[in-house]
Length: 309
Image 1: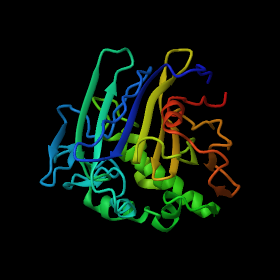
Image 2: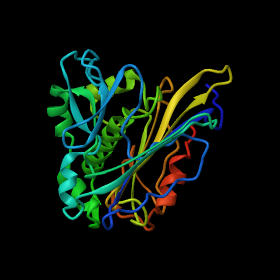
Image 3: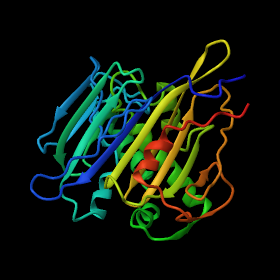
């Protein structure tokens, strides 16, 4: 199935927090316009099927109405709040009690732009698209805290194949949950992909996951850059894809996924900045030789690799 060498259309997401300095805090940097969409520190999409609300603690959440099914299992039981980034990570940053958040979204053709700012604790934003059984069951089992914590805290260590599987699965879950807050109708992945992950609970077939190290020169302690688009066949058929890069402390995770039938392999390898952990049969040692800056997170997340022909 011949595919175009470039994605036919793309959108993007950036989610981040900047530590407040002083009483007024500091303004988050405005990202340059790109041929993608951006949301910054996501609070969610605005459509008839969704509800955006401020909780009592001031944390913004987004989710479907109560009658909508769980995105991972299809259950019609009441939906619960799921943290976009695991709540336990906040304990790794005890000195970061408040942060400036910016959500920015840009349409590919320039027809739409949104920007929202607020202050609040980092790692507190949630979506309401997951049932209690998934949220408190298998999703909680994916956390991998003993493996992730040293990397977030910038502690060099070897990663075994089981370690890499845990990290790649958690990264995939985090990116899919973050995608539930994408503005408008631009979901990160289809309902079928969410259902597949809910059933198999492992990295997506045909997907690629890397680890890297963040220099800490920009948003802190969290930054997510997420772009989506579609590969196009010669007959005009489009298949969705996404590429997300998230930095949590010093740990960078990059996840690429697509929905091309047959799950063809994607060209992915290690470099001086990224270490391939899925699919891979070779253990790695973190961190890689070079770190990624905030500008690199932004630029490289917009690069969508092509499937092997």
